Amino acid sequence: MVGARVTVNGEEAPIAPAAPHTTVLDFLRERGLTGTKEGCAEGECGACSVLVARPGVDKPTDWVAVNACLVPVAALDGQEIVTAEGLATAGEPGCPPGLHPVQEEMAVRGGSQCGYCTPGFVCSMAAEYYRPDRCAHPEPADGTDAEHGPNGFDLHALSGNLCRCTGYRPIRDAAFAVGRPADDDPLAQRREQDPPAPVATEYVRDDSAFLRKSTLAETLRLLRERPDAVVVAGSTDWGVEVNIRARRAGCVVAIDRLPELRELRVEDDFIEIGAALTLTEIERRLDGSVPLLAELFPQFASRLIRNGATFGGNLGTGSPIGDSPPALLALEASLLLADADGEREVPLADYFTGYRRSVRRPGELIRAVRIPLPLSPVVAFHKIAKRRFDDISSVAVGFALDIEDGIVRKARIGLGGVAATPIRALATEVALEGRPWSAETAEAAARVLRGEGTPMDDHRASALYRSAMLGQSLLKLHAQTTEAVPS
Image (tube, rainbow, N blue to C red; front, side, top):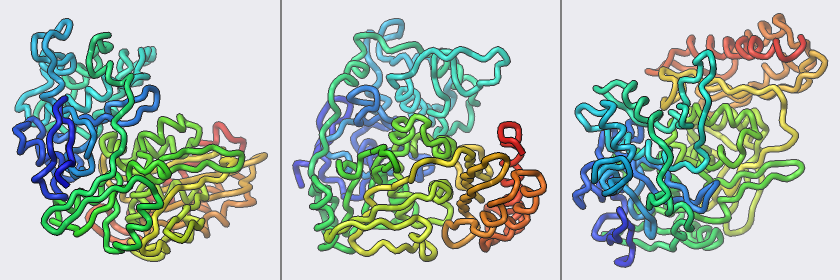
């Protein structure tokens, strides 16, 4: 479709003649915007990050940093992109002509050496710079909060950006030194206007198509007609397949902007989360009201990935090492599955049927995740991985316990990385329920937990290590909670 266009640094550009699988990264570089770099091509290094105008949480528009290496440029039809080149604004108060305040701080504080990763850092830093609710963050007297600056800058905004030569201290110094956007800053002013509205897209070239419908009903009818279509939201999984495994699809259907998949409802007896809301949007809208998810989000990949990733995508892939299933299993979540004939509700515990397989039928989408209320008061999400952030888990465990008068009245435990599918630790739940929340109970249940699932040896961890970590995770939970919960 010749009319497909994207706005780059304030100027409209046709997407044609790019192929439907062409990434934003390649599209920008072909236009001479070479500040956007390819490092890993799978969303782990952040050298490719750019800003995209998205619906805001606190203002009409948020500037959101995403991995340009993963997103098809056709997915941004009608949308706005700002690159590191576009951030530079002449006459910015206190900065040399041509430098943005973020770029100025990176320069004067030695935040760049070879410069390869710098544009990506600058874009991620700019997204945090423009976050509307960023405010002064008093430093604790004991100096323990190393992840927030006195200017309110959250270093998690940079968790998806890697630097191999500068070292992170000067980059952190630059992040903690940036001030507030000036009143006449055009990108700050842009937040007060509505974001670009989603547009229906029919981009077809060389027998391959990228399609976006306006409504869920239209999308479901399309999926009935094209059961071979690949469905994408943030493309954080499909983008890797395209880049690393050279996968191509005859038809890709985008669902990320469908309004029916972007609702978040809080009712008396459940919370319903739209399958196409990004994890960042969910995190900010829930604002800690689901404590187990509040523990999950900072450990789920990086902020760059969470800005695109969705629950629908993480569950739809059926991966046994996805981070969200263990937490959602512990929360006793169910999925609302929709197709052209209607909708059905399936408990998440019954959803997975095998390795990357589920009960979801051809033409069926995950519309929403439903979490029953009230929530269990004792929760934890433990992720065992080789890196603290931005890594795939070897083992992930979600806990949700009801403890009254020192007795475990109810226990729900979700596990990832120890079987062909995410599973509930049913035997361990039985070993806990009705017993005192004591060291003896925890140790006995930990022995049971070590035997749950069918862990295997691979390059991330051995089966023996995974089993040991399961048991240790329960002992850790007991140690973390016994001060607050009578034993």
